[in-house]
Image (cartoon, rainbow, N blue to C red; front, side, top):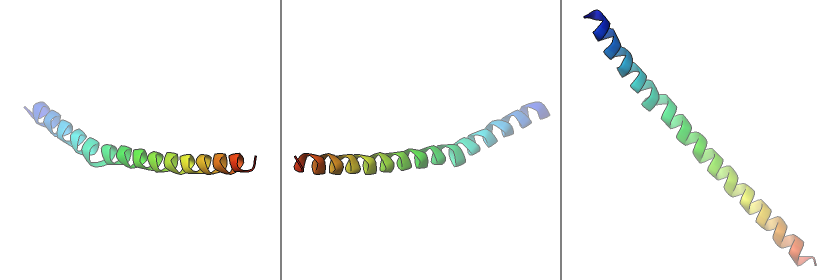
Length: 55
């Protein structure tokens, strides 16, 4: 009986860790990567525009 109770508690703790720590960290990392990609796109667009205007 105690093995079942500890198993259920382990599953609940694992779900708490996944939904409380792992998923928000992944979404934060994804948001950071998206902002970084947007900044890189703007820089490349500006460099391309300046290079084309100098010709």
